[in-house]
Length: 130
Figure 1 (cartoon, rainbow, N blue to C red):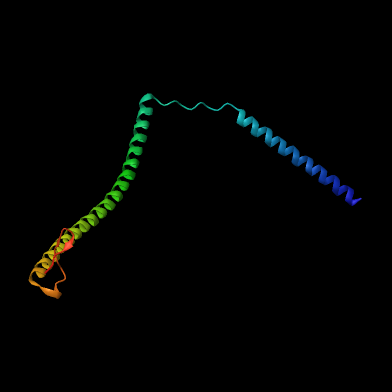
Figure 2: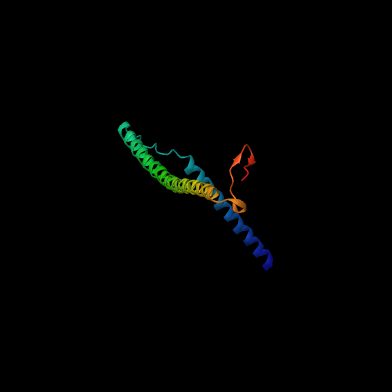
C-alpha cells in the first residue's frame, strides 16, 4: 500500500508543478503582450546633438587609426628609401673604381712590352701585334 500512496503523491506533485509552470508561462505571455510605454521622442535639437557627438567620435577613431597606419607605412618607406640611397651610392662608387682599374690597366699595358703584357688594345676585334 505504501507504494500506491507514494505513486499517488508523486502524481499530485507532478500535477501541481505542471500547473504552476503553466501559470508562470501564461503570466509571462501576458506581461510581454501588455502595452509598453512609448519611449519619449527626442527633440530635433537633441537628435542633432547626439548625431554630432557620434560623428565626432567616429571621426576621431578613424583619424587615429588612419594616422597609425600612415606612420607605420611612412617609416617603412623611409627605410626602403635609405636602403636604395646606399645602394645607388655603392653602385656609383663601384663604377668609379672600375673606371680607375681600367685606366690603370691601360697605363700598365702601355708601359709593358713583350710577353709580360696582359692587357692589349684590340683593333677591329683582333689583338694588335707587338
